Amino acid sequence: MQYAEIAYENVVLIPLAAYDDGLYAAMLIVREVDGLQRATGVLGHFPCPVDARKFALAYGMAEIDERQHAPQQRVMQHSFDQAA
Image (tube, rainbow, N blue to C red; front, side, top):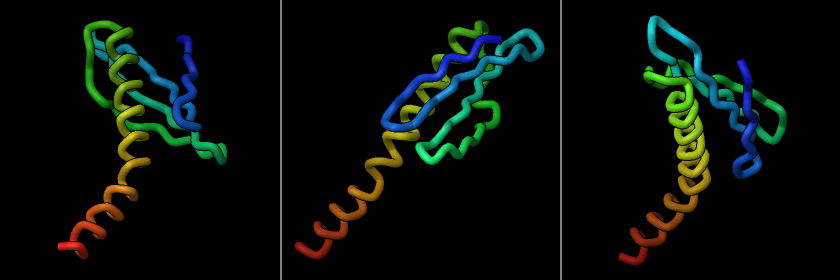
């Protein structure tokens, strides 16, 4: 099994596809800047390994994007609430 490492927003994403009973299970390894790694569970099942890896990569990118925008959104909401 080949593992492609994709650098995204200072995080390394490693999308995986594992054959599982006729389908491919999508999973993701996330390596943070400090070297800490974590793995997701199975994110879904797909008919081909390419689709599974694409889904895992999209999932990881969305998670990173959400993580980066969450604190800013809370500050903006707090400012809006005080202005009202």
